Length: 199
Image 1 (cartoon, rainbow, N blue to C red):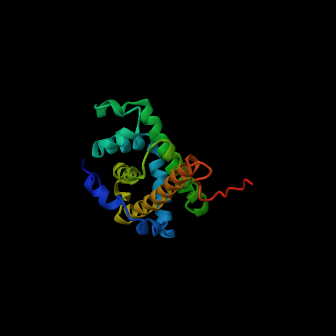
Image 2: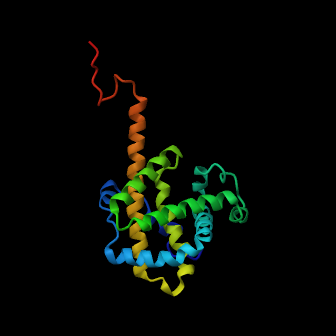
């Protein structure tokens, strides 16, 4: 649909990464942080619109993602989705997370905690990590027309870096919660971290 990184390109830019790659995901540099913050001031005025565009595009380019969303699973008419209050509300929640991430760019410990918690929450929503990176690609496609001439290859790279950093943390949070739940499901005798102290 017109954006260079949608569809298959999104998989190459933001797609599945090896564990080694994920561990090496760097946070944005200082110059990138400033670019992101400046562009966010413009994007913020259209967050509801960006949220809807982002998810409609996500469902167009990756229809399998709808399976994660109970409310949208059976909706075939994308035009109906554009006017969905539920989709608008979810888009606003995601945009709120992006806004919090931008606000914490100078406080990486707080940003890391935020992203890890979101990843843990997504475990309980049954939203696997393979979908996280698609959202960044669709966000970038949605904001390009809003930023117009302000959009540059450097700004695109800054946003990609932020999304790669955050999705790496979310994936880690998801895996931590998955492992924790697996441990909880084991009987006390089977848990490797618990010693049987009974006499």
